[in-house]
Picture 1 (spheres, rainbow over the protein chains, first blue to last red):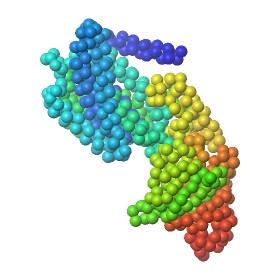
Picture 2: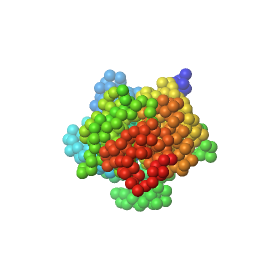
Picture 3: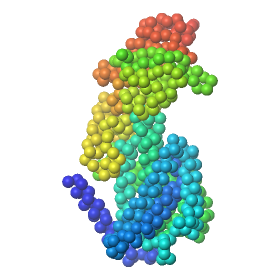
Picture 4: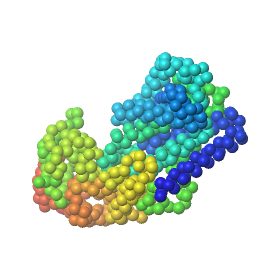
Length: 336
Length: 261
């Protein structure tokens, strides 16, 4: 019964996004539409990164690497699948949707696996050490793609024919994935797993003394975080109709960190706001190019002084809105 | 068979022999005191028992199985809970959440079922919430369940730490200076609570404590260490009169009356 209700809710959400798509396509210029899509992709990146940097308190500054793995993976698989599937199922919107989502899933899988590979040895490290490992990983990945000739080396990967990658990414798919990932990470965060991850952030020694399998949980959270960055990368690749190594430079990882710090480390709604903030502010600062990092640095310093917990702190928007009422005792978690 | 048994345990930090050949056995259902001057190695012994450190030599067996060298999470799962000398609660989480973290064994549902909120997940979550509530009620924290743990007064934080440890359904509870920072009134309440843990909940308790009023009052057996070595073991009455203990722990010139509560 409850499963049916949930399916109905999911269907209603998808339908609403689908309806909204027409409004967005009719009401906004191509330029604004593109910013909206980028904002959605940023939200996925921020909510995913927040799981590891915010909730679990481990610091990754190499998430552009996982995004790159997802982007290249989704681009490559999309191109290779399109031919055979169109041959077998005929060309049509449904086939396109199938190819696209399989490609995204493949991108997420590759990114998640690289998250496992990076996470397993390095999550035994704490704090700064982990940050350095992830930073190194991000750069190694970019340089690998820069030299992978079957993926177009430094020029980037645009598929096998000159028309480029099919641009599957549209409003509907971006926000369908945003909804799915935000819902999944929300449910994960407000569960026993989420409590354990927060406990690791608060006091890892105490968490271990309370039988929490800290390493396993950290690696799992890291892989989930990497996989969502992979989805974002796949959406990005099929929006650009191509991927280039320079899309995933160190600055991209810093943008992601800015998103979650501005929004409030540990808050999902904060990460959503932060993702939108960065998408809009990047457009406003487009003329400054890489000098925007100076402005971001300034912004981070101001936040550290004025509001170190970010916009929302570790709390969620809905918790802040009904703060006047005390939380019902014994039932602090959300159940949907 | 003793519930916990240490045999000739050694722990060395660089040049410091923090624990040297310590052996003792804790019988099931007893309250066992571990005392000694500052830096004697009491907390190191706790860290050895709970797997934070691995002993260089010696054996630690719990319920008949060797636990030396196991990871802390595994030892906790086997049934040893602890509190910390400097309170280590999860400060930004609520009181109820703090307790629930220790309830892994009640929450078998997978991550996927948590994401999908399956019926199995909800059932586990309810069992966990119910058990956490019971424990909070025992420790008089039920009405604070929704409060942020870090905002609780000191004494409540100490009680919360014990409640959280009990969520593991342990056989053995290690209390590291539970009376630290408590006044004599609070210490008396603590005495009753420690007895309650043993009498009503059937726990075995090991207590590290500097407050002699508490130690002499509740412990059946007291083990005294100094400079990492055992210097005495016996009943409170014996320990009070042991010349080695008086010399090492209380100081030779100190009148004996100060040792009694």
